[in-house]
Length: 160
Image: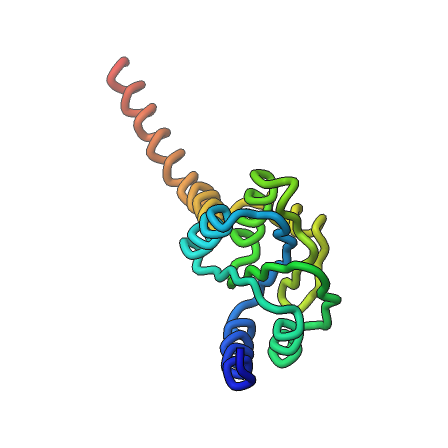
């Protein structure tokens, strides 16, 4: 890779990293290309990105994007997007399916460095769509109870 290609890659990464608020760094040593493609396809559905990046290039891009400093070593795959919960669910599901070959190293949510336990805890929260469903259920409950009450009153008057 030429110096100019590296600079273009770094600038693309900086713009991607600035546009996202969630980043997870994982170890993927020994993982097959087929499984990595499955991870990429799953991430694409969530509007997240998955990329293997050289550690020095990643460090430069993260620093320029305003992320805190990470100690990046060994083999790393970077997964980033805008929704912490869905990104955490994606990664932890993939970790469960590939325990011995794929592991979480660290992450960064809203500018704060997080560890694997934090990412695991976030992955257990309800997703955005689930939360919206719960909220709608709570909002519509009074109307449902009112209609049920009217229906019961109607049935009671018909029986009398």
